[in-house]
Length: 182
Image (cartoon, rainbow, N blue to C red):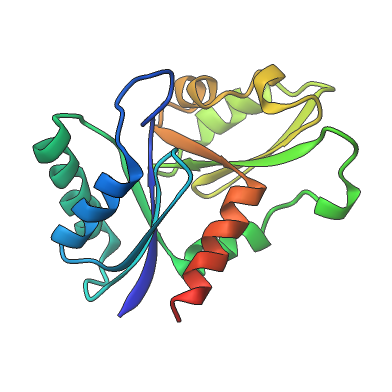
């Protein structure tokens, strides 16, 4: 069985699309996934699956959520190796972070067009740094994510691609949970 991480977009944010993690864990079990573990309330699920095709897993999870909760929720599914690689290719040094600085990962549902990436880079500023690699926008937020112009919605609007954002600590914890399933 392969180990995967599902990242749900936009649940339990501002009182919208509420899903209790225990209920989500139960749903994943009913969908045929094993060793299901959820992490914090923002829709992070680590699990094992006999299915190796992440696109089939995405369709199954999205349908399961729609059927159970009547929500359309975007889902990104990455293998443990893919998520580990995403962290390792982060261009910002964790050891060089100043007080209050944090690294974020905006995971894109599809690879953005070169033109939209160029458009996003036109918003470069002295407060935050960003880098785009394949289907990930790496963010170094110097004054906190809440003060960054590079919100998930802003990135989606400019790149014209759905996305979901996690901080470095969450990403590392998801990999840690995944590794514990080996």
